[in-house]
Length: 331
Image (cartoon, rainbow, N blue to C red; front, side):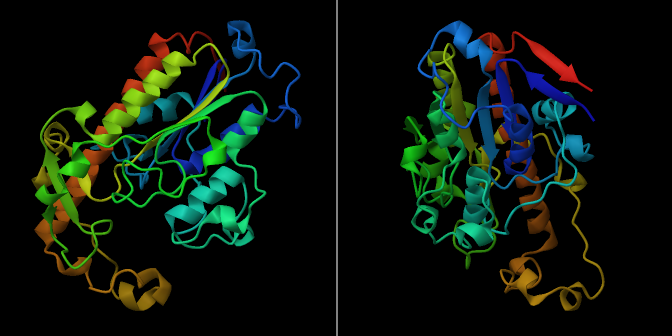
């Protein structure tokens, strides 16, 4: 397994990869703000690594770098190949808000008391120092684009949702045509709310018209504007969270005939704890047909490839801006 240290920038992909990378990269960062924390010269920035934090909503290990060879994910695969790929990294809690709060505060859900998405974590642990706040204390510019702390998707797209304003110097909340075209969705589980429904849209238009394309556009702008000072910039991508919306070209990468329908072990429902089935009231597969399930799996794969392409745009921008000028590998 390879480990890497980029002299001027560190990539963090997904919520399960964050803590270990930062623990190694910033173990020697002092607890108190640096004496010259406000020095924004190029030489000062080069002395301290910058951070590009990329959070991908509901992304699992269905990727090329984890053995799913049919998935088109060359950019994430590249980062896994040149960086650190974790094979036993687990979600802190089976819910978005508690997990993101845990990652961004370094506190367990049982410690924060944040145990579901309806809670406001800052009310529970008002004195907690978040990861971006820590960098801010040490003279870093911190910014968020898109979903980093919990947001309800797709309802909160274009808003800050229950964000933590004290963590950021700047925030951007893009809203793309995917939010405006939800009435065009194919929906196979109409009894479920839109955030949970098995639904998809083969969207018209290009990458930059989608919310995630706009997230990347704005992130690239911030990288360009702040490249000569220490920064912690977080790009929060919304897909592949439901509903599955991506430009048609990414759906065309996959074949419905080759999209497999997963099978469950015999007596599965009787063998698992009740809690594991609490969100699956209509069994199996929310009353959908095998073909409908396969269509939704293909739509998920399309969204993964769409998000991967956006991450590729970020990598290209970082390279173009000269932020990959010095690279060291530790084997």
